[in-house]
Image 1: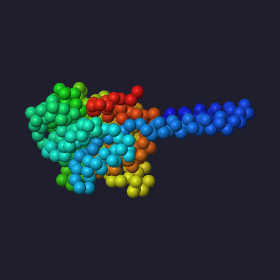
Image 2 (image 1 turned 45 degrees about the vertical axis):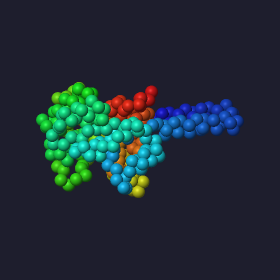
Image 3 (image 1 turned 90 degrees about the horizontal axis):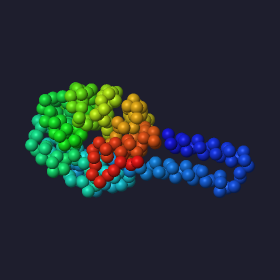
Length: 299
């Protein structure tokens, strides 16, 4: 990690200065100040929340979301519209891309109109909630339009927030077949397939057109949860996914707000990822994959 490199350099130089009898107070305090500035630079990387829902009500409001984003340094995001079209709130001024939600059938004319008008910049398929596999013929019109307009398709995978959902449809392994059939389409596995994170990581590792978001491995306010639970259910799984996929280009930060509070989840997520990968995982990958208007990748 770059912070580790900086500290190594600091201690090496400090030892050298001692051997040369350099005792000036200003010389001894210069390097720690540089270390502190370097750490703050990492902390100030802009953040993209690549998975939110804009179902605003009396308790969860647009103002509340934007306030949470401000505290966490979030500068944009990806909002998932319900499979019936509900929950759409135009937040383009806040650098938010909206995913059109699909139900059991794809209304190709309506979806294409939304893509042409730039109302939508991605497509969301609710596996599990809808009792169809990712490779169902019913979704083929969505994949064809995704390729035509070069927008990503996001799949809900893993655990669901509904007892009427059927988990066999939400297994991330089923996305492999779709990725092979549609190599020109970009696919995103939401929630890292949790609890089937190994399957999700393998599908992303094997297929160059498949990526992951690490949203909502725990839901709620993590600042109120036991540290050992956060370590077990968020940090260690994300660290494993990052390591298995061999690099920083496959994984994106996301929360699933309002189910998960932004800043505490961000703080836990950062503990799982080496600092040299933060620019990609917390910003660049989402900007690149979702082509978020008004935002450019960091160098």
